[in-house]
Length: 183
Ligand SMILES: [Mg+2]
Image 1 (spheres, rainbow, N blue to C red):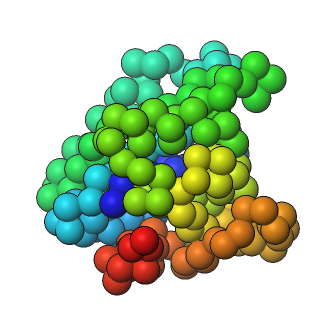
Image 2 (image 1 turned 135 degrees about the vertical axis):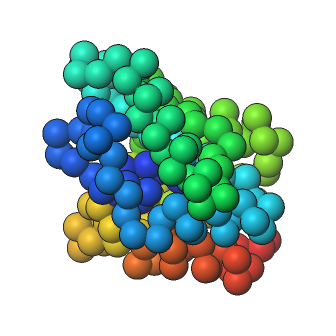
């Protein structure tokens, strides 16, 4: 499968003031190990992340690269890797279809990895992750880390169901490895 990961609140702790440096990238327990397990089972793993902090002028693309270099380095230590990182620098007030809940990044990933939407699953902690996945026709997992518990409590419109709820990326990974999303 193609596993599409939101970043903040799924792999690393979410920050209301954005992750602005490698030091502010703090991993959620067992998240890197979960990615390595997906790699070992030969799933593609990509990140699709909104990074309006670039559009807002809070960080540059070079800083984002240095943050992602830390992610890749720490992941390598667990024998894991990310196959590709897609990010949307758009601000909410000048958003293109790439910024979630737009489906642009997911559609790019599906096309680049030549994957049909029913063979792809999005894992996120925000409603917009699930909405973007629904637009693209992918499976959807909500994790309870990051904003996930609040997202779950706020409830979902019927059109974005079904949604699988997992405690964290580690549990979401177990669901995928158990074959739950095989069409
Ligand atoms: Mg998030």
